[in-house]
Amino acid sequence: MPIPVSDPDDPRIEAYRAVRERDLAGREHRFVAEGEVVLRVLLKQSRFKIESLLLAEGRFEALGDALDLLSPETPVYTANRVVMDTIVGFPIHRGILAIAHRTALPPVEEMLSRMPENALVVGLIGLANHDNVGGIFRNAAAFGAGAVLLDRETCDPLYRKAIRVSVGGALVVPYTRALSAEAMVQALQAASFDVMALSPSGKEILSHVQPSRRTALLLGAEGPGLPPALLARTRTVSIPMSGGFDSLNVATTSGIALHHLASAASRSAL
Image (cartoon, rainbow, N blue to C red; front, top):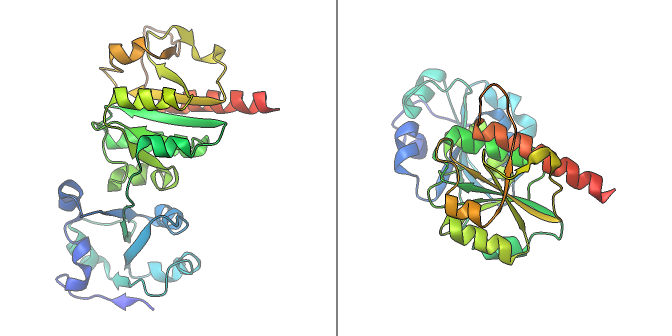
């Protein structure tokens, strides 16, 4: 049964207070999921434990089928729009929030050792934009990537906005962090991955590339791109463009590249 909340200072909903400020300050190994689509994805992921839900009045009934997946002891708080907006600190138009616990990230080598013989992995180097990271996770989920590897400079995929942009993809695709870009490439090569680095100066054209049984796609930040030292030790791939353009939004680029690699791998398996 829902637990009505009428006082914005109710200590039971402390975790939801000032959401944007806590996005920046952190939540002690917890994260926020926002919106119905993301909540429905979260409820199906066994590796995340949901601590509680906060719903706007009127959303509880509409979510009945999804909430059947929720553990009976998990509290579901409800509040009217005014109270909920006061708690959160800004208008929550979707009226759905959840607090969930993060899981410990395994070492890169351990995650790669669990990959099947045929696998597609994405590596992110220096991506500080949450929209781009969320978009890449969405594409990784859509095209069947088995994991996403992040360097230390890449932003948090479980940041509220990144999860929302990924439409829950950041909750679906396993990920972990490498100590550095160099350590990431070394681990991938040691695990027999063919490491492809996307760059405007890439020597191979994407449409001509035939992926290996184990393929890793590396993506760098817009502007600086991937480090020259990393490009020198990987298979470099480019996407030809017209009109004087030499680069795309990195999330868009990931969708094009992952679609090609996944489609080519499927054709090879036939």
